[in-house]
Amino acid sequence: MERRRFLALLALPLLPKALAAPGALRVGVEACPYCFMTILDARHAAQAVNPQGKAFFYDDPACLLDQLSGWGGPQLKAQEVYLADFLESTRTQPLWVEAERAVLYHNPKVRTPMGSGLLAFKSRENLERHLKERPERRGGRVLTWKEALKEGEKRPWVPTDFLPPPKP
Image 1: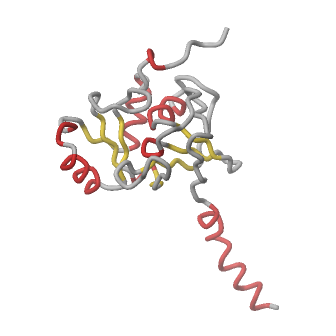
Image 2: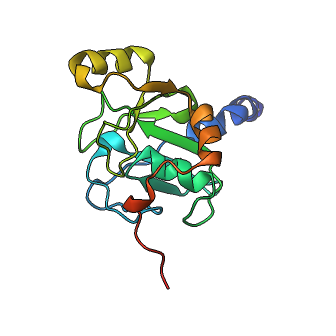
Image 3: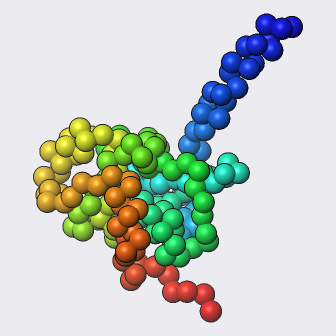
């Protein structure tokens, strides 16, 4: 009996990380809580998990950035944030990467669901592979998640003409 108790105590610090995992995105079903669009392309998806463990899915990383920066939508306190790697995700299945580890690429010429021109990659190598495959997308800038959040404090990432009008 003492052995089981000892092993359980050893595993206790690992439990929160073991439980922390991105939720499963249902493409064509989940709707973005910021812009209310149905998520139709998992390559652009983002996800925030609140302290209670509820997952919220976004159709564009910019929607999540704007909501976290207070530009609209319900107030959100995110305990975990994930972004879909644009290169390795498919339209129906995201490959989630922790936002803090992601490499963001911003180029206004790149078409994204909300017109932000913001793509996420799990590594600099994936970004370089993407730009090699799509050279017309060169000329953008590389950001970290923290840099994108800081920039989002000054201005919204989602162009205002893409958002629905406020409810009366």
